[in-house]
Amino acid sequence: MLRVLIFIFIVNNINGQPDHHYECDVRAFPEGFLFGTATSSYQTEGAWNKSGKTENIWDHLTHTQPYEILDHSNGDVADDSYHLYKRDIEMMRELGVHFHRFSISWTRILPTSFPDEINQDGVDYYNNLINEMLKYGIEPMVTLYHWELPQKLQLMGGWTNPNIINWFADFARVAFELFGDRVKYWVTINEPYQICNEGYGDRNMAPMLNVKGVAEYICTKNLLLAHATAYHMYDREYRSKYKGVVFITCSASWYEPESQDHYGAAWESNQFTWAQHLHPIFSHTGDYPRIMKEKIAAKSKEQGFFRSRLIEFTPEEIKFVKGSSDALGLNHYSTTLVYKNESVKHMYESPSFMDDLGVGMASVNDRQGGGMVDDVPWGFYNLLTTIREEYGNPPIYITENGFSTKAGLVDDDRVTYYRGYLSAMLDAIEEGSDIQAYTAWSLMDNFEWKMGYTERFGLYEVDYNSSDRTRTARKSAYVYKEIVRTGTLDMCYAPDLFMPISIDEGH
Ligand code: BGC
Image (tube, rainbow, N blue to C red; front, side, top):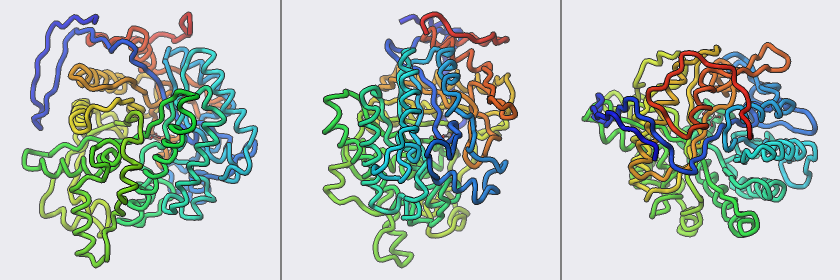
């Protein structure tokens, strides 16, 4: 391993977590480590009603309640990737990435929501995208569900209707049949927490159902069963033929005690949020974390419910969900401080998920970059280490990690963020974490859900005033390219200038 360690020292940050500092160390990623970029369909494709595509829940929300989006925008055109996908692939080639993660818009290939009608124009679009990527040796990593439920299925209850298990499985089958010969990495569902807690138990995401303390738990159970159904289908019917991997992507923020008195609050926050989804799939129990089951059952009883609002799995379902992922897809952005005191008791509506959890939350930094992500690399290290220890070191693909800024090409805060988080990830790898891939969110600026176009996550800036949605590399694109090209992270390297980016030979 190409590694010149000149100087390492470990200091404790305010919360007593180890913080590694490396000076002028060239740190190598493991042999065969994969680097990629990511986008999702609603956030980039545009063409919302072109070539047979029908309405999904984000089309519906942005068109019927535009004031819910910070800048009143929508994804009608977005980055126009439906027409400009070749330029997107050129950018992947400029960066030299090994794979790119994108999602399939359900209603673009199944306009009725069901497999009775397959939209050939939609299929052509994804075939062209996949084939063009493969032409240049870029592996497609395809997410089946990145939040774009057909509006018609939403009218029937969406993820709260148990029929969604079959609806989703049918959609998955169509995708495996159509693209499985060329797609070897399948993400079933992106971020159960955001879908269920933010969309069904709150108003932060479509469909903004906001039936607190009830709908998010119904949604979660159906979602995990839908995921497992698609997983087993692939395993049974496609794996021997196509030899791909199928996994779920969960989001996980790290929750850190505000001070040493609040370890319990931090532990419970980690259990309630990301362990809610990891436990049923990756733990030996195959069930929700015990603390969650106990607390929600007790609260429900106190509140006059006849049974726990957390819908339990049957023994058969536990068996079915347990182990239903070839790897853990992990999206991580940041860390939050948590505490528990008297004031928290009256802080939240009851019933609600936050009331069930019962902790107060505060941000670590004051978001100096102006964007929505706090730059806390040691939280990433703590998360990865905890997952390794708690779940028997599962193979992990980091399927999203990134930083948002306002518009502009010089993005030093993003450069600092990427370098810090990659270094924290290397710390975890060197201590034994089985992390096999890293994905930068995002290849380019895109529609950032309820924040519209006000938050920019792109390695490439997109000019939304130009009709061809001109994409221009930011400084972070150049820095990421160097990391991918060399397979190393040079701890001293901080380019003052960024150079014109071009496609290297062989890409
Ligand atoms: C989502 C992305 C989103 C990103 C930044 C993730 O939760 O998967 O769609 O753009 O975070 O907020």
